[in-house]
Image (cartoon, rainbow, N blue to C red):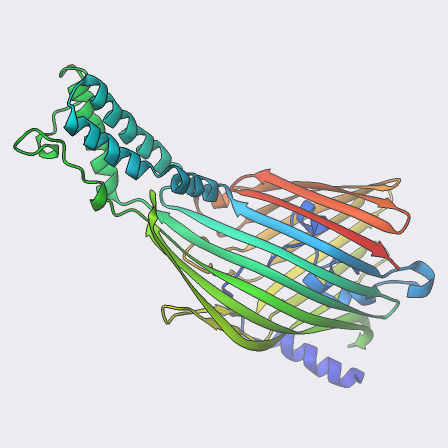
Length: 428
């Protein structure tokens, strides 16, 4: 491709392309970038450049057959979930609504202090289970894939095949449910204590003195949407001269097929939930476009637009999930004394898939090489998060190289997120 054509393409992409929002997070999949806080737009290598910025495949200063700049990666696996999701999963397993209903039936069959205490305990347990997840967002993002990345001087390429499931939602506890549980607790505490504590709630009992079972009237819900994506992509990159400056540019044409999921259910009762699935059989075409510039031997800048051609997936209920272009910028600094540092920032706010929190991450990470080991740590912040999702997240990981084979892992248990990733790769 001639340099004048490349110039026209990049002037168009980065000067005039509309800043739209997308419906999925930018996505961080490999253990190196996850451990470094999610940064990679200027700091990626041939093993993960296809995920972040394809232009980085042409960043190398020596030929591939001399420096073995290329990587075969399989598998690369990552999983990230919100801690709130664990609470909702526990709710589904424990089914506290049914426990409360059964305790009410037991009390009505034999009203005494012990059975009243059973209702009181069940009411408190349901309240305690709902409080940590009430009105909180949940998310899930997992990926498994294979990468062949060929890094070279002034040119490079990569192939990727992956499957990613991303979704989010909201756990909504209504004010009416919260009040009903408070009334049950006060009313049964009054019964158990013989009137010394709590408060009488005659509206909870019928004319015969039986405790009314109102668990079927609870209206708290858990809703969410998800998207399973299968992706095939081939990345290409070159070193070019743009406006009398040498830069690296890269393109990743890719084909994507998606299946959508919708969930609606009672928050505390897994038996009252339904999942709808719709496979979008047609493959859709899109493209990632990136550029990077080495300002010196130590400092590099990067910019990428992912999913340049918008993607649209229909849902079973007649709605759709859209993936609009995503724009991220990054910088990387390498120092023999201080290690390798990377900074990324989402230039756009990425909308949620299913009503959860939007995302716009600022990511900072470092990597230090100690003989055959790579030690990594990082931090990321959702600039548009609410509640727990506004908290900073600390990340960490390590890698070990034996001859031409590398093993990398990352782990996150900070703020609202739990994440883990592993990868095995071989240089060639």
